[in-house]
Amino acid sequence: MLFDFLFTDKEINSPHELERIVWDTMLENTRAQHVYENKIGAKKTKIVENSWQDQTGTWRTAIYYEITRETFYSLHF
Image 1 (cartoon, rainbow, N blue to C red):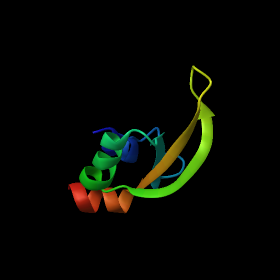
Image 2: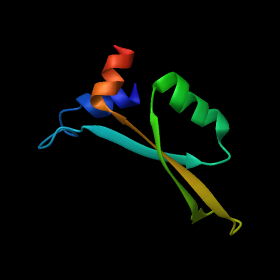
Image 3: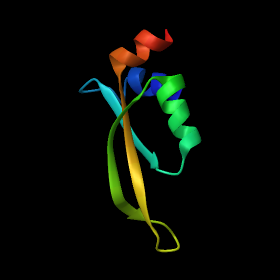
């Protein structure tokens, strides 16, 4: 529902239409990665080691995903 909203909302998509959504998750979040890759159809685009520090000061690795408007609608509608 969120991706459909982001791709279709008139305020978000003016003056330029949103063509892709990019987000990240922690390397350890394998459940989310499974959903992104196997349920949503997103592509893993890069892995950035030591991307950010958590509240304990531990450096974390981020995995970036993206999905295009075309891919999203071809897979989900």
